[in-house]
Image (cartoon, rainbow, N blue to C red; front, side, top):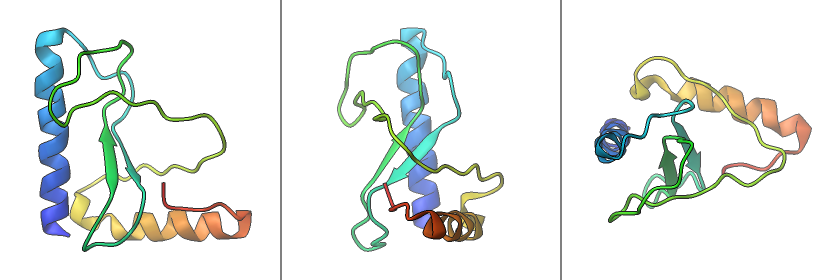
Amino acid sequence: MQALSQAIGNAYAAISEYLKPLGEHVAEPPYAAYFNMDMQDLDIELGLPINNPFPEKDKIIASEIPGGEFSASLHTGPNSDVEPTYNALFQWMQPKAMNGPG
């Protein structure tokens, strides 16, 4: 989990540094979309929402969150302490027949 926390922090920092010279500012809180929970082959998308299109570079690409029903949580504190937040989110989703992750 520590390696994941560091990788996520590094990714957000890289995105922020890329956006600075473009004059872009983060418009909403950062997000992480988990497309699986396989910790050996994790597939996630990390993003900092902005208001304008931007030129893509290397692994920094533009994407759009599709419309529809979704769940979200906001974790405050170190990423190493995020597991209870995920557990609460998935527990909330179950009776509503929402599928996760994603």
